Every structure is written in structure tokens, then in C-alpha cells.
Length: 71
View (cartoon, helix red, strand yellow):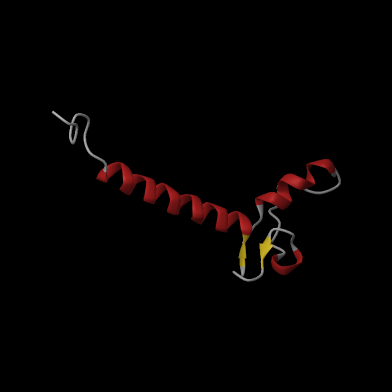
């Protein structure tokens, strides 16, 4: 996997070729979630997707405007 974080972090070092993608460091990286064996950025993306799906479920189940109001 190529890491966009490492590529972005190398902007301060002009001696490094910024066009070449950098391989994931896995366990050597501060963003690596050891208990999940997954990059924290990927985990965040997956969790945000889960939240988005749950919110869509809530929106779908809520009553329509005017529905359920006392008469």
C-alpha cells in the first residue's frame, strides 16, 4: 500500500522525489493500529462510513413531517 501521509510529509525535504509513492511502514508508523493490524487513516474512513450508514438508517426511519403529531 502506498502512503499519502508519508508523501505529504516529505514536502519539507526537497531532496526527496515527491512523485514517487512511498510504501506503508506498517508497524514502524505512528498511525499504525497494532491491535487492528490496520492504518489508523483507513480505520477512520471505515468508521466514518459506518456512521454515515447508521445516520441514513435513522433518517429513513424517522416520521415524515406532520406524521405522528397530535391532532
